[in-house]
Length: 323
Image (cartoon, rainbow, N blue to C red; front, side):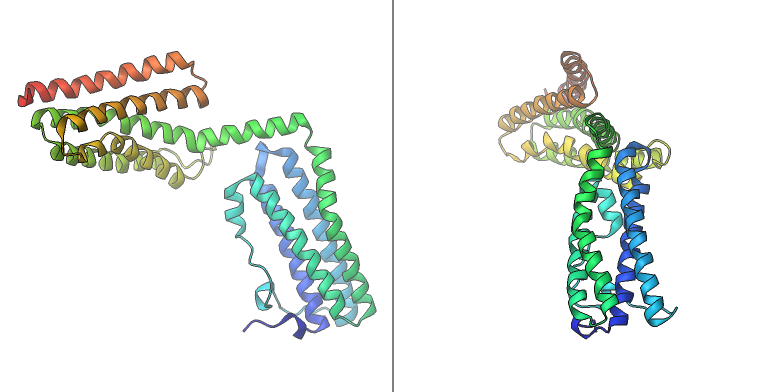
């Protein structure tokens, strides 16, 4: 059972404060390490904050040793009722720089409130004085963070960090997603329309599209995940890339497969063809938006490839007996 905060002794309060500062220092260190060379200015901010938390821990530890000796009792925030549960550090890092800064603000506010409440709970003058000082320091920490951002995050640096975020987004999300969407939208055209025009029935075409879309999604997902582990290329975790690629591949094929759930053959066929054109336009726009490909060049390339595959399916279905 977790202890109530009001039941903590002064020794436990001080030990908890030491543990809190140590944990926060490690979090800032993890943030700084995760940012690496892509965000040097923000990395420097977190390193400065880590140094501040380390200094707070030193002051708390010195006072603890003076008051209670060298053995620091073992107590963590999980042992005390009322602490807000924080997001796991690894998850915050995965969510990116903005999430790290938001988590920092929450940590500072929570720690400030902790020190204010703890100062009221203790009758020891030295402990109360230090806790009050640290509460004020944590309140000012957000101002310090703002000053550090002002100092290190100049407009040119912010522009560099925005560009770095964009590069990472393209590497880790756009590229595998685009590869999947292109494969799913184009490669499934031939078998779906070949079956549709051969049978002149919507259900066989739907089953063919479902099978090819799911199969292609699984295949592309594994291929992307196994292509590299992302350690040297910065392309992110292979599982994430593989998932994005696989889902986009399956989605690209299912887009023009779902119309064949409509029983009326000619209605389903017309709608499926319309969806194909929407998919090809979406691929062209993504290549233009994120891959720096001129729009008309992207449209020309994508539509030529898509139309050729589509015609292959039409001819195979027609001459295979469906005509």
